[in-house]
Figure 1 (cartoon, helix red, strand yellow):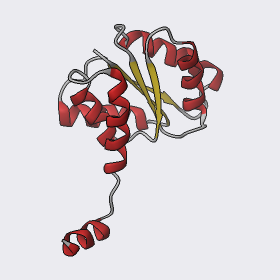
Figure 2 (tube, one colour):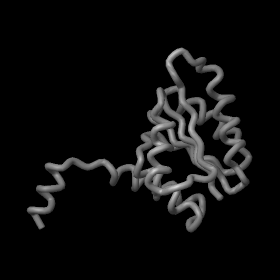
Figure 3 (spheres, rainbow, N blue to C red):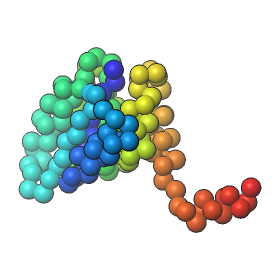
Figure 4 (cartoon, rainbow, N blue to C red):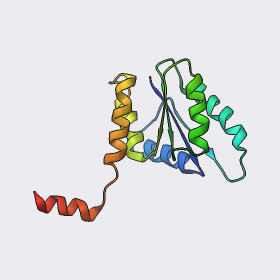
Length: 138
């Protein structure tokens, strides 16, 4: 089973995982790592590595981070460059992305899941006014 590690600043990772469980039920091989105020950035890499080990059964792992270029992304990217099994880092995590990966990861191959995660993340961002206008235009 493809593993999922959510890594964010503050408590967002824990909140996303909690919300995903509330919607989808149990989330096996899925964990969160939070970089809280006062935490050492130098210790983030080893914490992510430990989380990867806890969810990786050889089918690959997605590391979903909050922002491109920030500490969670940079730490995960270093690990991805050294990974023996498939490891993809995706920035801009949101709940639709997490849920879609949870639902699709058993039915799809690892490489195809990247596009699914990116599409779900983008499609999950919508504004009410634009959606109403789109509906009127139909």
